[in-house]
Length: 104
Image (cartoon, rainbow, N blue to C red):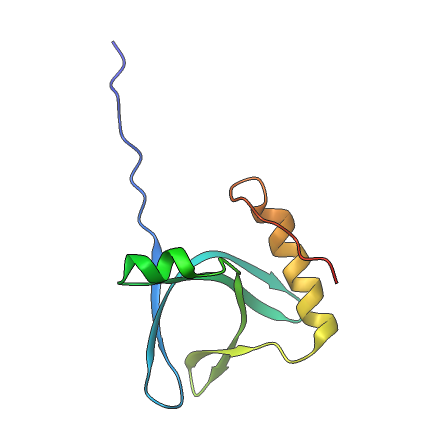
């Protein structure tokens, strides 16, 4: 007799505070490490279900930095670096999530 075990899923949730003190909550969907650094693909999480419905569903992609032994996240400013990382995340996540690539 086989035992039916439920898979435990524990999302990786992080809280970030911007320069103005406003707090945001994200679920980390994936992480990529390359020669250029470590990157995270995240989706915002809202307390209000209506805000969740109104959200674009666009991935938030950030780079992980380190200063004085502490990790911090910052936006990728180089367009070429951003496109390379975004394409890598889309390729990795498109089988798990419904991802629509925007045409430029």
